[in-house]
Amino acid sequence: MKKMVSVMFIFLLLLVLPCWAQKPSKKSKEINLLDFKVIRNCMHNMTDIHWDEYVNYLTGKRVNWTGWILDIKEQMWGGYKILIDMDPPGSISVQDVYIENQPKEIVMKFHKNEKVRFSGDIKSVLKVLGSCAVTLENAEIKPAEK
Image 1 (cartoon, rainbow, N blue to C red):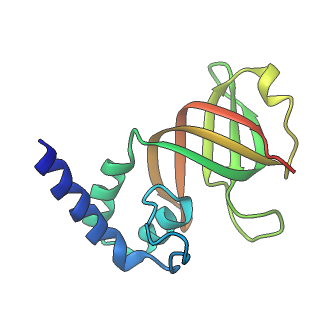
Image 2 (image 1 turned 30 degrees about the vertical axis):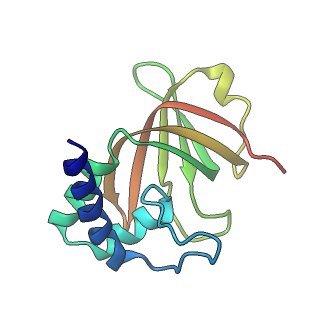
């Protein structure tokens, strides 16, 4: 089992290396396969079959990211969906991350373009409008430290 996990990790690393657009810092030579920028770069540079394998790898993984509130929408069957842009306000971009089924008392604390830190388990990753749309479940969100 350990050998299979090691082989799978090496396979995924080989898939991701060609799409790594930024050089790792001198402090860290490690590529974070769960970094949003890496995921978006991979989406642009992988074939569909490689992308599908990468998405399978990502599904269920826990992430801890920072982004900006783009909007909050009421869901048809109750609760609220938070739309987060991973690019700073003023960038030409779309919402990248969705956190669904949030109670009103949580979402009312946030404002448009507010910087937030959030974590959650990746439920899905889809190609949408030239970017990837990541939906999180079991999510927690709070204002980013200033």
